Length: 469
Image (cartoon, rainbow, N blue to C red; front, side):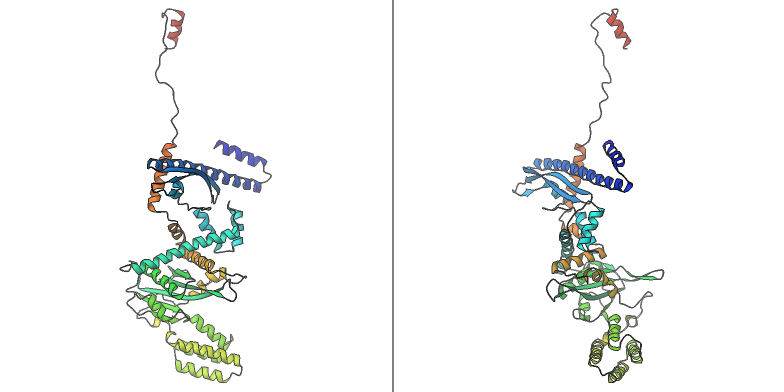
């Protein structure tokens, strides 16, 4: 501590201003913490080595390893050992949960992925350099994001396999009404003229009000670039692992596009004893209306909208035919034809779900939250000349999903293969290390003693001896 205080005095004395002072103190703090943690890891390695030697393991060699933490690179000594089956191990790395060839701490990897999901790889590298002791390239940022995203993807795949192999459904939360919406977002791929579709679903329990602001209740997201079957398998597995929908009325919403039809929702939420209600997304209906009739309010547009709201097919047909007779341009006729086909193909799905259930909840609202939630993907992955590989796109959306659902760190740590047994071993090693590292008590000297006298008490030495009593 005295050394640290002395160093701080020197920094303050030599710095020209408070900004330079703080920067120098920050750098010194990083260096000091990294050095201390390295010493602790080296000491833990010694304890772990002695433990394994007592179990019959043999020492093969000792070397150094450097791992980048948020506060700086930590360099520590570790021992390579051979077990009874001639397998190589680094006992300390296994206890700490550090992979072979891992160069960044778990927190650094997760933080990099979380930051890269909000800004570009280059901006991520610059921000880390500016605010932490982590100095990495934008290529490394991409590699770390792929690693973390792959961990979340594997966790989802395992969830699907567990559901397929389970003898019965997991016990989940019971709800009376359950809501789900799904749609896709296309992003540019690295191959010429080829896009990648990000399939996206949100599930929630209803709505919550905070003053005048309304938000979804317990929203969860499922995102992937997998094919339609894989996407719906993940939706089904996620829902089954969190909810018991046997007695729940499931209400769903989509634009009716390929891969998002009513039968897909019915299959994904088949555990419900009630038919799954699937309505056509009103945003896409009125978007098609504006394309066919224009943005301006007209008599034809108003009457068609009213017919849609009243679900009156006869009136709709009359007004569409009447408007068509007024058109001369081929492009306008084609737009109207597309709108007519879309509406008639999905006519049975154009309804307000609140009119289809016996008793709608008091806080019931119309569905249509998907479009605003798509911004999580589009704001980060579209435009600005961005192109995505299949691996990078899947990793990015899985990181997004993990952050929205608060499962990213748990999934990452689970895929690190650090078991509960390894955690107990680490605690035992630290406990033994603290006992071995305990300082000896300071000597206070002898409590009793005597000085021998080899002369008579009446002599000069005897008189001196008496004064010591």
